[in-house]
Image (cartoon, rainbow, N blue to C red; front, side, top):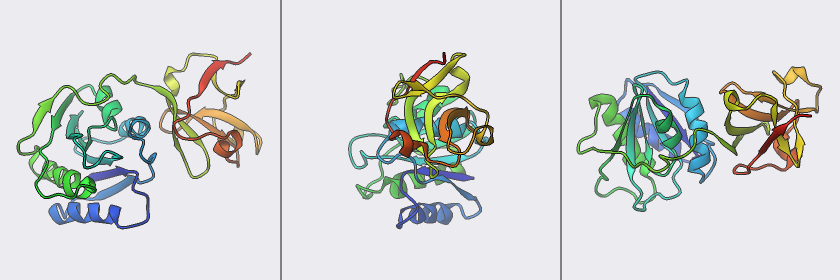
Amino acid sequence: MFLLFTDFGWQGPYVGQVKAVLAARCPTQPIIDLMHDAAVFRPREAGYLLAAIAHWIKPAAVVVAVVDPGVGTERRAIAAALDGRWFVGPDNGLLAPTINAAADRRVFALPMPEGVSASFHGRDVFAPAAAELAVCGRIADQREIVDWVGRDLPADTDQIVYIDGYGNVLTGRRAATLPSGMSPAVAGQPIAGARTFADVAPGDAFWYRNSLGLVEIAVNQGNAARRFGLEVGDWLRFQAIT
């Protein structure tokens, strides 16, 4: 099974071309769209969201992850074998939180094929590599590395890593690591916690542990990002509720 995680968006030819490469080389393997609206041009923030999603990906899957503002430069292409799953993408920090969290990991630099497009490695580099991994379990001429970009990133970040279509604000902070009694604060005001949306009145803001285990700020039947003027990349503070 292939899973796609990109910032390509749902319009245009890009997702379809990646799928066409995978389908031509591995016609019996299903292709799942994890998401195509990851934080645009922000591999670090997108990487924390990918790591949270990766927790739910079963062994034997091959994930093609592309948030790649440095496409066509000297940045490496890598493949990582992580707890029985493969992740393929650019070596720009996107895969780092997932790599760092894996108990069993091996990371490889991939050869750059001749004659590929300078601007579409998702189609010309990562998709063919993913197909080869699905068939062969390795890439010819792969070279193991220990210096992937983002190796020293912390396991959590208090940055906003994604804003969904409802305006809910996802952070890179795992709720399980938040000290007891602490809440995210916006403009110096802590936001109260709740278990789910219906536990607060319509229009009320709250934070909760979302389905990925991350701290998320929401407004019941409203748009938290718009209300608080928040954007991907913004840093949140956490403080005690008094």
